[in-house]
Length: 436
Ligand SMILES: [Zn+2]
Image 1: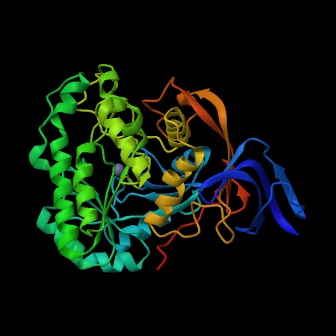
Image 2: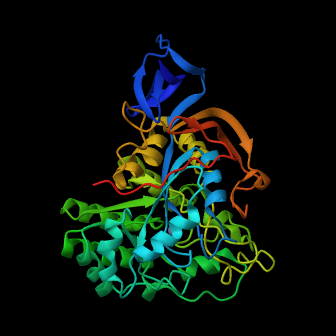
Image 3: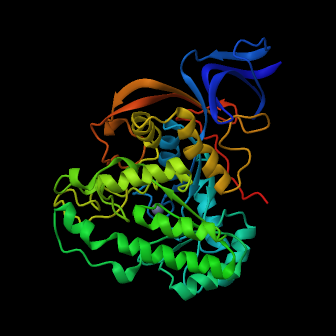
């Protein structure tokens, strides 16, 4: 007898949607059978026409604990993740204090997270000037790779690397490097202004083009894997395609806000839309969708990056002074599904972009898929139900969101983590270590 069977007429299995019964023993998926298969189970859940998805994998989340826990923390971020159908997050190395730039800092972060996590959590390390010698040890301690900034990160304890320092980091350890690609030479200090256009002009597409060229050069010179984080400027995709064609190991991700929001529609003073790189125009978003459809953009991740409402300067609406970051780990799935469906995509495409491919990016073979042997991370998702985004129903610590009031399609009904229903009071998450 198995512990749990979840049946759905719309299970996303092996890249397609089909009726299925997913049997779970302990923490793992034991089998995937016909929807009406006879299976002896302690618990038998029939979702009917509600879809069954693998838990999403969000490889780009800023939890900020310890040190800036008033911005976000492990309990709130992982509750938000579970409510949004995300069962795995990989935490970014910065905004926490200390930043995760050596083994000691990783241990401090894990101690801060212990007992508080509602989904599984892995960690990125950080590559900053002067810490190349610390990278091999941090990699051995289980981080999934290393994040580097080519422009100011916004926090002083996580400085950017020069192109030469980036190359030095890449040579220090055989690892995946993930890069915030904006070139400081193309960024201007934005003047104090409540007009989004002024902020946008201060961070032109050319800054991304130049930094992506730098990252590609470093990947080519060292043979290392480089992944471009939160790509906004679609023009840079031609550089990535050309580099891939010559065998350079470079990939890219984008985020829900770049795919679905339009610079022209951002109201004056609406600093909840500020992020770096910035949201650009609708034609740019169309080009990002084409690249996602073609597979040139590998995956869609949240870049969940909250702060306090004070730091968002909602009182003055000054884009120059506001912290840049959009918190959307809870809303990414319905935001993307709503837009993807309108563009003729299938639910299985969304699962590919937000579950399987991010899992593959970081080498988590047991995550992001419904298959025998995989972790029983499952999501009951009603793809036809709609809801209006009410910030008071967001679980993250500071429910500031550019999606407030939007009507989205797709409601997460239940999330299972390794075979157990996720609840707000039981912190059943585990730390994930890089495999292999
Ligand atoms: Zn980020």
